[in-house]
Length: 117
Image (cartoon, rainbow, N blue to C red; front, side, top):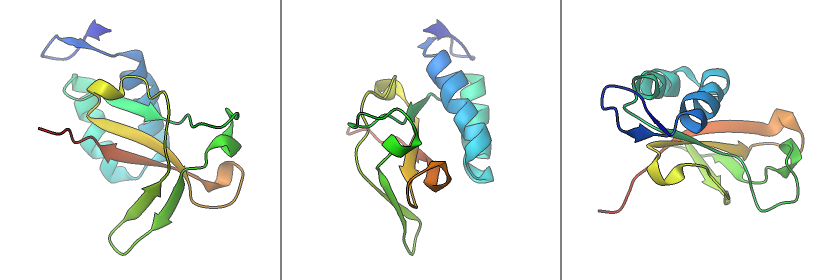
């Protein structure tokens, strides 16, 4: 953790500004990039990468969270484990499967975090 951005408070750097931001840069639509990347770079938002699941696989075939298209967007159905820095994240970059096995069926979604008041 280090202070980054104008607020200079302790923020996760590697997991947010490197791992999750890199995933956003290369694998999502333009709108999430435009919304989140400047905020992450400025230190105003924290992102967390949600990939690992309760399988014994660490490759693309280990991603079983299902993604289905709906009338208003997408539905993500499944669970993630060990999401580093999720407790302070403003957005989760979530990996899910839209098609059959292999890397071609994997999608990434920028999911804003809401916390109970």
